[in-house]
Amino acid sequence: MSGDAFLAVEGLHAGYGDARVLHGVDLTVGRGEICAILGPNGAGKTTLLRALSGMIRVRGDVRLDGTGLARRSPDALARQGVAHVPEGRGTFMPLTVEENLRLGAFVRRGRGAVGADLDRVCAYFPVLRTRLKQVAGSLSGGEQQMLAIGRALMLRPRLLLLDEPSLGLAPLVTEELFRIVRAVNEEERTTVVVVEQNAHLALGVAQQAHVLESGRIVLSGSAERIRADEQVARSYLGYRV
Amino acid sequence: MSGRAEVTEKPVRADAPGRGRALARIAAGRRRWIVAAALLAVACSLPFQLVPFRVFQFTMVLVYAVALLGLNLLVGHAGQISLGHGAFFAVGAYGTAIMLDRWDVPHVLTLPAAAATAFALGLALGLPAMRLRGLYLALVTLAIAIFLVPLLKRFESVTGGSMGLTLGKPAPPAWTGLAEDQWLYFLALAVAVAAFLLARGLLHSRVGRALHAVRDNEAAAEVMGVRLSFYKTLAFAWSAMFAGAAGSVYTWVIGFVSPDSFAVTLSITLLAGIVVGGLGSFSGPLLGGLFVMFVPGISQDVNDAAPGVIFGLLIITVMYVAPTGLAGLAGRVARSTKKILRKE
Ligand SMILES: Nc1ncnc2c1ncn2[C@@H]1O[C@H](COP(=O)(O)OP(=O)(O)O)[C@@H](O)[C@H]1O
Ligand SMILES: [Mg+2]
Image 1: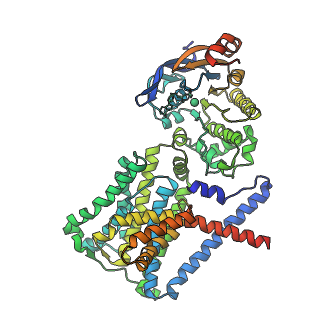
Image 2: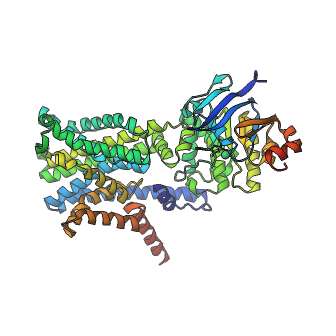
Image 3: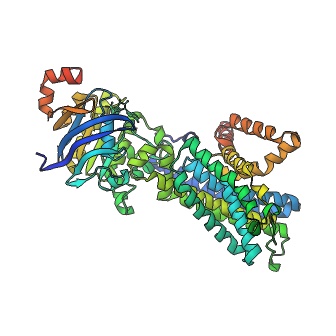
């Protein structure tokens, strides 16, 4: 399976100073797949994404399409096409929506291409087009999350990392977001790793899912299987899916 | 800080039709140019209206404004602190003084050389310093300012030690028909306008966006691929460059440098100046320049025994009345006046 994996993580250890959080995570994600990472609060889901985008130091092996990515700097990873939508969205509040979006393409050169990508992103999120000159801090929570995802898409990512996009949003808004993520995945063949507390939603769009607990993957399988397994739902997710 | 200011400064009505908004934006842009042109016209007439001593004071306002443009870049736009800005000002001032004193370099050439020296020094010192944050960064930059004065006294043969150096001022060319004070004023004005345009260009570039991103959300900026230490160091070097240019003009204007003019208080006064003037705003450095020039003197007049106390109280008052600085206050006043006018 790891032979044709697009993203292959092996024996990944990471943490913050003396606090170790990930204790040898192994997982693979196929090309063009959506993969959900589930698990309780504090399991290390955010830490895993930070490790994948180079924000924290890691031990272990990370390969994207065969290229070793572990221990590279965040800007090197951005250049490799890894886009990370951080927990809490990371909006640049005083900047305009357009400035936020352009920052998403920061490591890319060529004005023309970036301009075309502004259009492409606004086609996914029409509401952003009407707000381009507006200060990002004035957007609603849902719009800010759209902006965060749109900004990540400005990189034309090969791997899109989403950290709890549903956090603090109304169910309707969240559904809309996941529908768009799905559309991006289908139209651009972007591989997506999405961390979610809302297992039901995530399993609805993902093909594969991994359950993380205390820094270890305790369960992996197809989204359907995990959704079907009520026992799994009770013991690992703490609630019924 | 400035973030809030900008959010409140530009309330955008989402329901306004796109075209109307675009027109409004063009109108606002044109209005800004008209204001700038008017300001420039006033600035140009100033030396013909005032007595030479006042002209000198406004020349110094411009000099400080150039230094504050740099500090604004670092503190207001990149979100880093510096308690050592005065040291780079001193580097520019002394660099110019030494060039004039030792090698008779023409005045015009001393400025780019001083600015380049300050930039290089800013890069060298910023490289390690910008890996630090908050309090640590404040301390390291403060240390730079503290070490400077003894250093200048130590290398007496070059710097003139405690006695300082006395230098010739640039003479007004005959064709201008200007007096010396007026000529110096116009030189400072030209440098200030050039510095303003340069800062504006920097901030509107891709690099300016990177600085704002670093200021507003370091973690998010980092995942976008903005190399934090690189851009912070660059901002530090730029801010040093502006300070160096300002220091150079300072030497032209004063014709004298001595170590005690560049003590730690200068750095602290400059930081107070930009915070009071308005961080991250374009008029902040000018308002801050007025503050740095006039407020210490006013405090001295109010209470000769403890000018520091009065100075401190004034800063606290301004920050209390106008948490976004004088620039923010001016914006608020302008908006409420407009509202009142519209109602009538
Ligand atoms: N910046 C940090 N510094 C130190 N410890 C952290 C930091 N962020 C998270 N942690 C710790 O790491 C563990 C995993 O956190 P996290 O990855 O955020 O979990 P999750 O996203 O699954 O809720 C928690 O125990 C948390 O306290
Ligand atoms: Mg988390």
